[in-house]
Length: 197
Image (cartoon, one colour):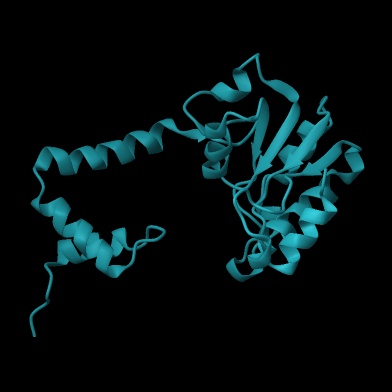
């Protein structure tokens, strides 16, 4: 029986399906689009990947991906270097930054503790955070995701920072704006009561 796809197209599908959130069917749609698209369009995607891989490096201060070192946020003199917000990923940093609410600096852990995925505390940028905490940091705010793995990661960060004596706080949790009390879980209500102001 003949192969359903040419080998080069099958190889492209296999490579695309390794991307997060891209299953086999989506990979096939993308691959077929790329081979039908004008050559300049398809190759511009390859060029953009190559350029990003060549130019982007982790900031030596916060570990966020950047084209300069330090990154623009760490180099900004208007940012308070004594306030550090810890996030799991650069996508989390962008979400907070887009809110315009944070005027300090960041620290990107590069993931979260997840035993199922084989990620432990030693796989995160904790040593760099502890080193920063000893250099004039007043407060470290933990902005890990409010789920089991995020909470576990926050505990590891707190434990690592304990010897530094720096103040460690957590993002508030509780009742969402526009939410209805009758539909909230016991855990959410308990956290809202514990962290009331």
